Length: 117
Image (cartoon, rainbow, N blue to C red; front, side):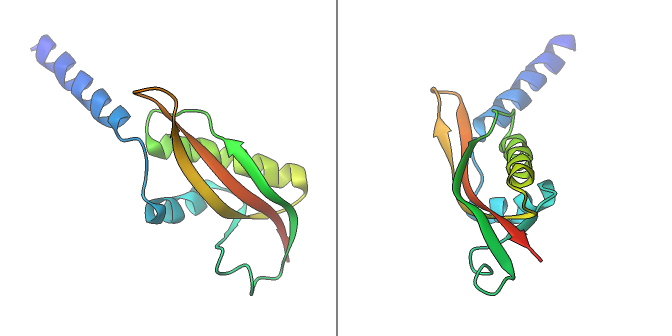
């Protein structure tokens, strides 16, 4: 019985680590729930009352156990940069998971920091 539990646990870990990315829609829906800063979509930027503080900032998130953990780590980094820049919002410009080795990928995000009224 103990051996069966260990095999199941190994299977779950392998499944979780094999999921190496999220779809654009999943990122778009999940990231705003993970940041304290206001999330402005690229389509909203024209009508928002926001001033760009820093454009084209890049952040490489610490590697997490799952794609959502990667996104959580990226959200922390985005919030830190928004605060450092003196803003309260951000626009996600691009994101991608970069393969580090055969089994590991790391999330890279590109964003602008904003100050919105």
